[in-house]
Image 1 (tube, rainbow, N blue to C red):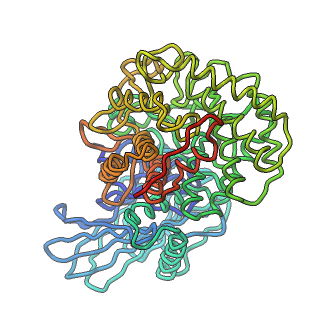
Image 2 (image 1 turned 30 degrees about the horizontal axis):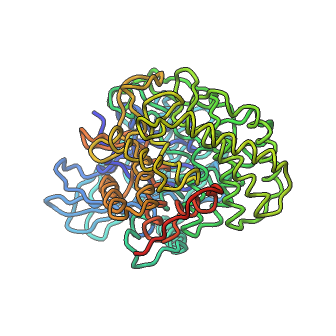
Image 3 (image 1 turned 90 degrees about the vertical axis):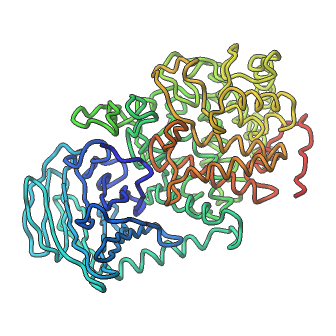
Length: 614
């Protein structure tokens, strides 16, 4: 039976990542990279599909856990009737992006505790049994191109294609276990000193966390730092790409088939991610993210995709893995993502908005960025009126989505600002004409006077949460009656238990069918709207509600099921944590990310923004 997603914590080294359960079992680990086949895939099946568990033999052991403050190191404490043990889990950093280590240190704290270890190694998402051999340091396992070594002094026993160990820890005892990956054609390398490696890893994370510009006594500081660390864990360090989540096929509704692979980098996340990093003071990460964007999208603009791999690869074919039963019997288990082939016009605006925000933040100038923007605008000028599949990646027929047209407006608006603010060269008169034309069309075709609201699709009567971005993007002022009416409509029709659905699937042909939870990023967008409309108490109350949805380690999934009160969807989700960071800064600063974005790009006839006085 699948354990709740809330039971998991995340460790990583910015090359790969592992999910560690409350009971001491690592149930998900892809090697050597985020998007590589999993070596432990119990998350999507059973222990027989691969896991690594270290825990007391007492099934009634009490468990508490935490991240060591301002780090990505998890410390789990097990208490039994005879004593207590802590298990410290982390992944140290290395110089070779194809060498990954997972270090686990079991230490006696009180009395004595009988412990056990179970190691089930299964490469290729639980399908491939490795060739396992004894070594003087532990054991080695090889399957085709992949090899891992277990380095430990604990007694090991092989049984039923699994490796077991039984040992007792007394107060002061310490027993390390190190699992090291390397390509099978290379010689293994080991962590020389596990204690020194732990010390270096803790120090690195604390130094990195200390660079955050949030005040030490600021409200919500710990939540912001934890979300920033989570976002950092989802960075692929060699390229600067940021994955949406380290998992695949965790369902948006358990037992159903809305199961997608999120181990890729979405252009749609780019602008809000950049604002989160810049406002927190992480300019190096923001610059690396911009660099990944420029490299990944290089080429003919007609071939621009909505997502790419961590290295910028474009070929992301979607496949199903029939041997995995799925999380909570949610089939199919998918790898790859067919949405990469969809036409989604909003990504032009997302990319150009990101590059413009980087320019305004005075990141290191990039000559390539402006050339990329101009080339993409030429393509967008001929395509912006075409139907597409929209921000929510509908797998039904293409339609005229308001958000897609809105982001087309953003693309030309930001290009015009590039000329006006930075003296860049371009056909600005043509861009102004297109910007004004798109603005008029949206106001005429996407606004329903009877509903007092913009709608999701031209001519429809339904709304979606993407409309909450209208004031944040500067398309209309937040106090414009059309914006106020749209927010009210979303509150009335898309809110469940005080949280926001991205759209109403029961009234939307999205080509998938079935239910889903509330999309957490959308609730953050609503809180941002409240800030822009000076509804600060409403914004703070919603933000506190969202903070309460995090698990005990401060992590969020993509969605939340208000019926079962559980996190659902891939986990942890970068976009949810980006939303947390941005909304916190919107509440903490008079000029937070939402106001920065809206004020900089307000249309010429926009009303003056109201100023925050608290």
